[in-house]
Image (cartoon, rainbow, N blue to C red):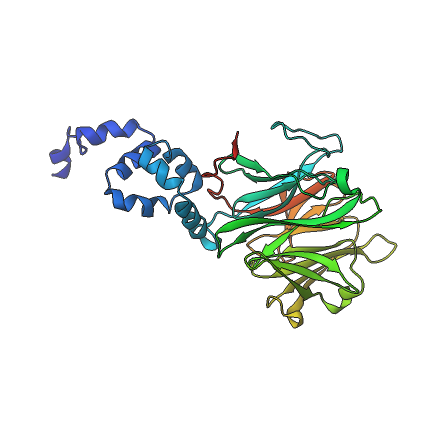
Length: 360
């Protein structure tokens, strides 16, 4: 009976039938335009970055809404943590001569170094091998960047120096701040500055004053503080000890890779501060033995949001992830380089409304 009723008849009206050949994005756009104007901002807040960039060309009203500072802030907050697509930003340098610079930024070093990330922004510095004074804030999601004004402390004015820098977000003032700490010295530093760790509204760096500790800078209050390291590292901070954000991004962690004996056996210690700023909560999560010819030495780079750790194998430069529960490695199918850094990254609209940002 049903077959006879619908035989030879279209179940769609002519208007719907004509839309079957349209891309799904066009259908969604038409549907959104048919909704009451007051509902549009709330719906747009739930859409991913790529869709929002495309929708800026739908109408002047949508363009104004998406590029408004309040919308950008609310979208960034809405897509933080559980709502975000958690990505990894990989920066590799294959050799000292690998100096691709397509955007005309004058550099002292072969390329810019990724210092860290914050709310979709990547902080870049020209300090990979030698003292440089170029700093760039870049958002690859919206394809925009800003070159910061020259610092007052430069090699041309003060000679050799070491520095620590970082980019953080002031949630109270809704502003992004760059911090740079410099120390003048007479020793040539042949390596990059220390990478930033931004958690709990503060930047973190390893530091020394009679003993080793973690120096903090609260971005909102612009005040410094200290966090004690585990007792074993307070008097001796090895060069291969690395500070990192924990997997949940609520505290800090330490990676320590070391050679245990003259047989070439390597061990990896992973520490996490379970309660932020509480020295007694430092906990050794894992001591991983990398022994024998089948277990090549590896350097830990960062925690993933899942709690896994990203490492680079020092012989093949292959990137792998380590499950701390099963202690199993998984190849990521990506190779590092002579210099390699990995940062967690989440897309955002920040810089989309910045007038003096350069588009590419």
